[in-house]
View 1 (tube, helix red, strand yellow):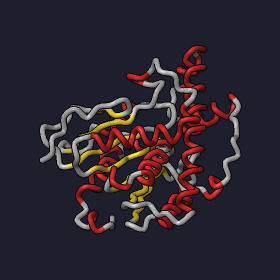
View 2 (cartoon, one colour):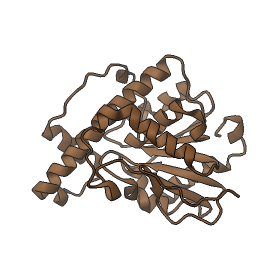
View 3 (cartoon, one colour):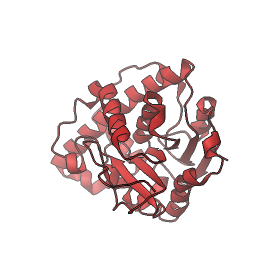
View 4 (cartoon, one colour):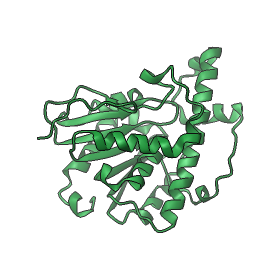
Length: 267
C-alpha cells in the first residue's frame, strides 16, 4: 500500500492521524467561514484505512493570522496551488469531498486537473444556471447574518462578541464572494461542453434553506463519468447531525468501494 506520511503543505494538512498504510485518501474541503476541523465529527467516522486530509484557506485554524480579504481576487491561483499540493502528495486513489463552498472548490480542482481525484462527493451545493452571469453582488451585513441564520451553523452567542462578529462576517463575505466566482467559472466551463471528468456523488439536506434540494439533480447533466444522488433529512448542515453522520460517512467511504468506480459509474 502507498505511503501516507508528510501530506502537508500551505493548503493541505492531516485532519486525523494517518494510518501506516491506506487504500485511499479523502480530501475534505469545508464550507464558507470554516476550516476542515469544522467537519471533524464526520471525518472521524470515515473508514480507518483512509488517509484524511483537509484544505485550509487563509484566515482560519492554523492559518488564522493570515490575510484573507484578497482570496476572491486570487481564485485561479488558489485552485492551482491546492492542485499542485495534491499532485505532490504520495499517489493513491483520492476522493474530493466538499461541502457548500468546498464543493465548488472540488469541482474547480477536478476541471483544472482531472488526475487529482478519481471521484467527487459534492455536498450542499446545487447547479445553478444563473451562475453563468456573475453580477458581482455585495452582501449587506443583514444579508450575511441571514445566511448564518439560515445555515444554522454558527451559535448565536458567538455573534454577540463585537470583534468575533466582525471577523466572522468578514470571513463569510470573503468566502461567499470566492464561492460565487468559483461557481461562475465552473458553470462557464461546464456549459461550454466540458463534462466533469470523474464520477460524481451528490449529497444534500432535504430541508436546506440555502440550497434548493430540488436542484441537486442538475449535476447529472455534467456527470458523464457517472452520477448518483442521496438526500438526507435536515438542513444545510445535515452532515453534522449526530443521527445520520454514520450514513454520510458511509456515502463518502463508498466512493472507494464501488466495484465499477474505475469504469466511471457510481451505482
